[in-house]
Image (cartoon, rainbow, N blue to C red):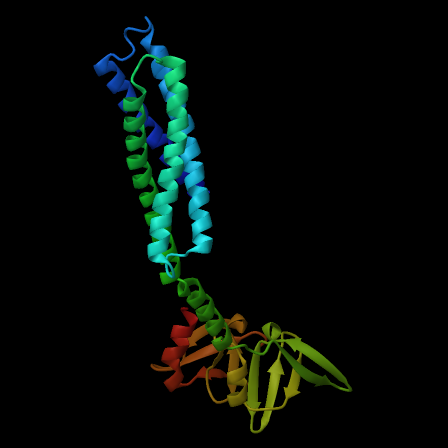
Length: 281
C-alpha cells in the first residue's frame, strides 16, 4: 500500500513538472500561436501526452527493476545491475518518448522541426527518468536496510514475554482435604486462614475446619503473597478474612478474624511492619 502511494505520488509530481515545463516553453517561444486561436487546446494535449508517457515509463521501469532484482541483486552483481538498469530504463524511456513525440508532431505541429522536438523531449525525459529511478532505488535500499537492521526487536519482545511467563511463579489454587471418609477439594480463595499447633496444621473456611499435611513454612511457598500473610508462628491469614485490627502494644497488633479463632491472632513484633505494608498494597 505504501509503495503504491509512493509510485502514484511520483507519477503525479513528474507529470506536473513536465507539464509546467512544456506549457512555459510553448508560451515563451509561441510555438503554437501561429497554428490556432486556442493554444490552450495544445497545452491540454501536451498534458495528456505527458501523463501517458509518465505512466508508461513508470510502469516499465518498475517491471525492469523487479526483473533485475531477481536476476542481478545489488549484493552479488552491483556493477552489472547498475549498468543494465541504466541502459534498459533509458532505452525504454527513449522509445516511449519517441513514439509520443511522433504522435504529437503529426497530430499538432507537422511544420515544426521534428529533430529539435525529439532531442529536447528525449533528453528531458531521460534526465527525469534517471532521477526517478535513483530515488526509487534509494528508497528500496533504505527500506531493506531498515528491515534487516531491526529484525530482532519484535523477537526480543516475544522472548522477554516468554521468559517472564516462565519465571512467573504459580501458586496452589486448591487443597485436597479429608472430611471423614470423603476427600474434598477446597479452592484457595475460600480459605480464611491456616492455624498450626505443634505438628498439626488446620485449614479454616467460613464454615468448616480440616486437617492438612505440611507445615506453615511449606504453605507460605504455595500461597499467593498478595492474598495470604504469615502473621506469626501459628497463623497464615487471608486478607479477606480480616474483620478488624487493634493495637495490642506499641509494636504489635491484634487481628480479629472471620470465622473467629480460638487463639488470639497477634502479629509478631518482627512482622508488624511488613504486615502493615501488606495491608496497604
